[in-house]
Image (cartoon, rainbow, N blue to C red; front, top):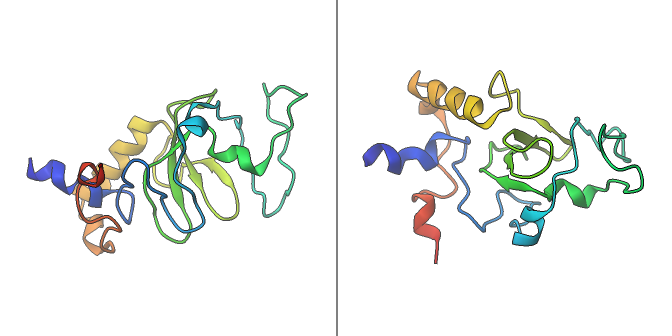
Length: 151
């Protein structure tokens, strides 16, 4: 049980976000409506460089993408600091992948794992922690296990 209670501080860098909470400053807590909407992106979008999203293969051409749609079908996992928030995509073509949301854009999180697939991402994070890379991490933003924050 002790290992399970340590999970919130394992990953992401500042700990996992409790369900229903905002992962970081500048983000909002996910609403059930947004979680149910399909995540429309399939390719990286750096809105800092491209204010209008690039065409996404397989996206309906009659439905232009907007900045507000980046939260659709995305469940925040926590925060890695510096405005980086890994999110698990739960709907759409990229369902089952972890994407990194930043203040500059979004894209599959291949920075922390060789593949953005959730299980690969999770395994890479656990391996890094087991190798001792977690000893220099900052204290988690939510120090208690995530389930303790539920009403």
